[in-house]
Amino acid sequence: MYHIRRYADHTCRLPPKGSESCLAKQSPLSGYLERLQRISRKFILLDKQHPLVKYYCRSGAAVIQERKRHVFNFPWFVIHPLSKFSFYVDIISAIFWSFCFIADPFLAAFWSGIDRFVVLDVITSLVNAALLLLCFTRYIIGFFVVKTKEIVLNPKSIAYSYLTKYFFVDFVGSFTFRPFLIIFNPECDEIYYNLMYVIRLVKLARVYSCYKRSKLISLYFNVSERVHIVSFLALLTLLLLHWLTCFLFIYSKIAYYLMGYIMESILNHFKISDNYSLTPWYQRYVRGVHLISTQLCGSRGNVDESYQASEQLYLSFITIFGQIYYIVCFVLIYLTFKSRASTDTCYEEFLLGVHEFMKSKKLPPQLKQRVCVYYENRFQRKYFREASLISLLSEHLQHEVWLHSCQRLIDQVQFFKVLPKTVVGIILAHLKQEVYLPHDVILKADAPYVNMYFISWGTVAVYTKEQSEVDHLVDGMHFGMPPINRLRLSSANYTYVAVEVTECFRWDKEGYNKCFMIYNEIADILDKIHLKIIADFQEKEDAQKKLRTHNILSDLQQGKIIETGKKRSKYFPEK
Image (cartoon, rainbow, N blue to C red; front, top):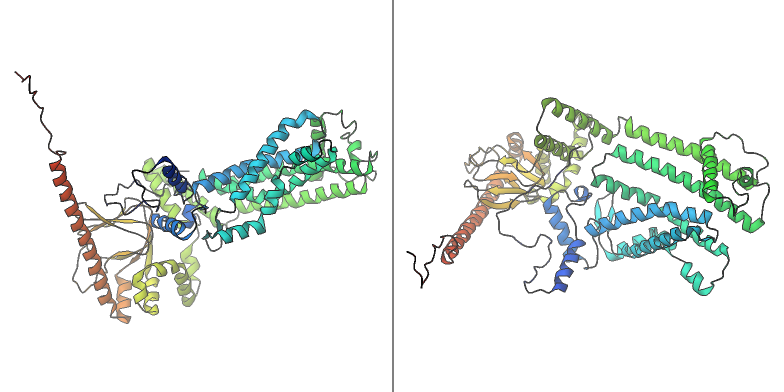
């Protein structure tokens, strides 16, 4: 799998319009504290390298717009969910949760007041203290609404969402009660320490959150969805085996504290709890794992009548749970590998065919990477036969589906807002989707006008015939002209080159003719818009020429262009 690179190394020749971070420019006389404050402020703003940026901000202009929304509309302490800080918090939280998923049940099962697990207990307490600190950062880190792809940065909404979801689990599961037990009751019974470890087990409710963080890691390293799902299910199976084994020993402790030593217990039958303080913990743990694993697979058979009723119920629950869990895992793996209805699977199969084709043609690595980038942005990892699916719908439904898919383009393009809705619908029905990679020439100077282009997302640089950069066009802007125009313009005056991966909708001659038959005024509107755009480009080009001339004169005056000869010494002239 090739590394997908969305942003090209574009050397912009235009004067900077402001800071890329959208923060106020810093004075050269700023102190260390102000510089540190600015660096920390950048650390909590949206980061272009975040793995989820391509799902919420597909272009550089959208990234800048989201940064402006964050900087100017919300308090300074709010942290963007696509920032570096949020990414590191998610990764650290996933690592700490994974450690606690193993350590907390183990301590709850095997802690007996002996100093053999003191080191593990101290490490677990430190990890839980760190998770408790990260718990309070959740009040200022924004979150996503997956269905609408909305990024929520309102502090009240963030606090309310976290309080109603995971605050109780994080706070109670990470709170350390040991210092209070040592201070207020140094000689307390062992049962209180065991109860402390049992309370921490509420943290197991964060398993799904850990899965989402692991998906973030897989996206960062460009791991396929199949490998991620199979790996997570394998690790989850091992964790379930560990948890059920520890719960068995936790039950034995509860039964011992409530009823004392029970001769008929299953723990005694399998020599798990006999001589509890003398048998090594690892021997008891291995025997417990063997018992639970055989019960999960259903290979032990009927439960012995000599066991306690509660133990029979627990083992029966494990057997039923194991069968359901295996069925769910089988279905998930089947849907991942074999289901043809899965668009993700179809895309991966299609991409494998593309790789085989490029391998047979012996394409160079750089060209292979560009092909992969194209298909990545063209299909968005979801491959289906769009033409055949749309053709089965009625004409009215086809029009409604296309209008809904182009809603973002309608909201952004100012040209559509001055036209009647019927005309906009006709234009949209004749648009052709195109994806351009960085450095692709979309329209070249002196090339005949054939199409008009509307930028859905991305950035396009405008160059003169002398290869001088004039301007950048971003989301919602348009360029080019239909082949039929009243200005008698037959060729383009500027060259348009994609700066990053850019999606454009192309409007050709056929679509223009149908619109012109219904709405004749569209020709006048297009002419006025095109004249305004050309005048704007010409004004910026003249301003840049004046700026370059001024720079040359100032460089001449300062002696930066003409090299100064070797000066003769005043007292020792050269011979």
